[in-house]
Image (cartoon, rainbow, N blue to C red; front, top):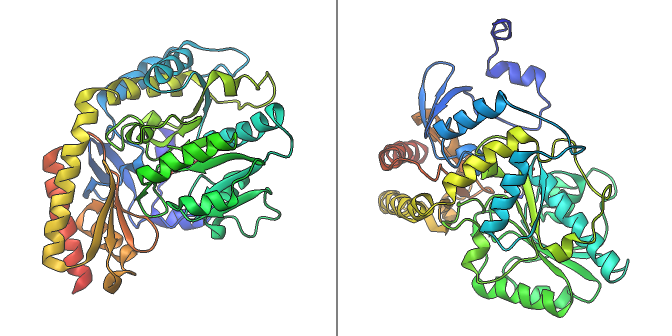
Length: 405
Ligand SMILES: *Cc1c(COP(=O)(O)O)cnc(C)c1O
């Protein structure tokens, strides 16, 4: 195979890739379930899940089977033609949620870009072109297009790229009074993650989420939930909004939707979707049959009591292992999050050590993530084996011992 003739290593990265990432020092080459192997054959346990993406582990047999069979059938048609996998996946997402219409994209940012454009367009068509204000939250993360970084609440990601889209206001997360102080009839949408992921694994409180629904209704604004990280079973329900007893107007999903194959979706109601018309928005790959076939299989597996009910049991195993580590090392101030979106918050004494712990974990054969500077984040496969959790936590304890000594 000619493609394998060129020898590449971690060093090659620094010479050929745009330097927007700082990847770990090893190069994974193979994965199975929650185990990964690098170029040297060293084995890792994966608590990072490709950043909450590989929700069924690596190379799940059913996903591989769909990849192969659809790969031999039809890959791509463009939206000049529709296709069966996209129509089936959309129908199943609608059956499983509040939604009545689906738009497919290829990444979380694209699903959010579609959601924000739809919210503005709906307000423009139904109310007034001046109803364009978007309320979003400090530390929020919504993707890396210019609109989505601007709605995101971390200016370091949006500064330096020229004028930003206007009429976006940021207030503190979980602070309903701050929202009430800025919302008005010119507001088209509130955009929020039910559980802030990148921003530090912070769940919205029920009062906050229900309060957002109420103020949106008062001002004819849409409640847009970014479920790119919290969705597809991660919280123990198919979508995290189900924990809050509210009905959103728009949700977005990506990451785990394709189990590792790039695909995203924006879900909304028929009423909101009805302002759209052919040509108003679109994307070449959106609803690609290969991506949708794989996502359909992922959804069929994740949206079952076996997988969803297994999330809380696995969470408990994580939390009790982390508590034990904390009894030994006194390093965490809090374990937070929902389901298998877990954050271990470093206490003040160890607050700057998140990156060191990530690196020490890799050396011990464990893949973890950080969220901000002082949170270790765990977003493993939803079907990770209890033995893998136990072994991974043993490795994590060794990594922490090394960092603290
Ligand atoms: C990862 C993430 C995104 C961006 O998704 P991409 O696929 O990287 O574009 C958006 N919102 C949330 C909440 C995320 O976690």
